[in-house]
Image (cartoon, rainbow, N blue to C red):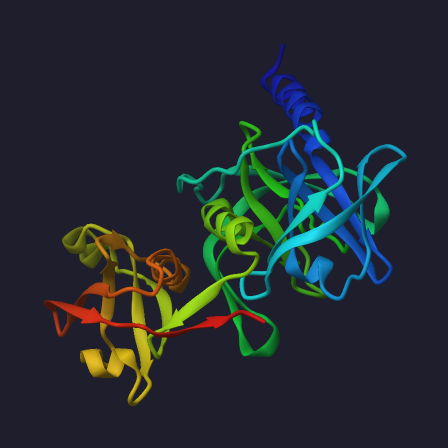
Length: 301
């Protein structure tokens, strides 16, 4: 058997094993895809897929549609959780560790243009991409892939060669080929956990504008991490300003955990419940630690 035949048969088995966990999420105003994450009827999809829906149905198998309702919605991350009126559904777990690499083979499964469980194969083209979103927001920390993601595929899984869900597809750039994006599984995991608990996510405010940046190789070795968060703006009078943060500061750790994107920082803020935030940063090559007391949380709407 040739390596190409072995690869083909491996992909066939992977698709056969995982595609039953991919569903179509439908309502009067549109349609998208979803991934069953719990056999008792919980599905993760995109916020934009369910937005404005009064009645939802989920196609869990050929010709089998069941009613559903939104259990939690977070427009800021473009993620939502849907509760389906069925149990015993085949589910897939989300990969929480960060092991994706550029060039890695991935598969996207979804329901583009109502063609159920269509499969596309590609590679991870880049990591930690940022895309502008609605209402002046940005989706950060995205996985870029050339696996085809078409209208209706949004909300379906991005899988690695082991059949593990490493992301949830979210967007494409119109008129561009080979530019698809997925929310990484380590982000999906914490957002889904909060949505199942609270139904929405409130994001404590510290009053900065920031972006994730790649560190030059020499600096990465010195700091023992490849990315950090650069402070672009400090809002006068807000928590970060009162704590002494400045434009140009390089945030390295938050509550002891390395941060390489704004999403990492937001995750720490949310999971801390709005309590004090300990930031380790570098300013003019000097390491500092500051304590920030976040402002009132905001509900993502």
